[in-house]
Image (cartoon, rainbow, N blue to C red; front, top):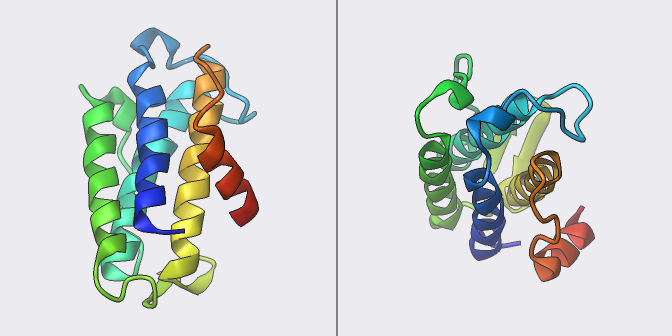
Length: 147
């Protein structure tokens, strides 16, 4: 996995996120314990988490805000995605050890987690909001191999 593939995963999920309406936020998702609102928060917050860990080597501090309550969660997602791609593209990022709540891993493993998580939840969001779920089949195949 490389930053370009991560960027594709973000773009694919970002397109789905753009199709979510405020009226859908309280709807169910394939993630049994989450409504669309929680899934949006996870996806948007994930970009910030990935950017922080890839950039600083550790997760952000504090509680995540309710991104779905804001005016433009798509813009926040796009900003976080761009920061994450930039952080993973930095010299040495793939070799740097990143400190996760579950243990330390190299950036080359963490980028896989970021891409698979983002893409998979993009599918969940598409399914929950009645959007097409045939998201980038080539990337899906690559990510399945990684997962």
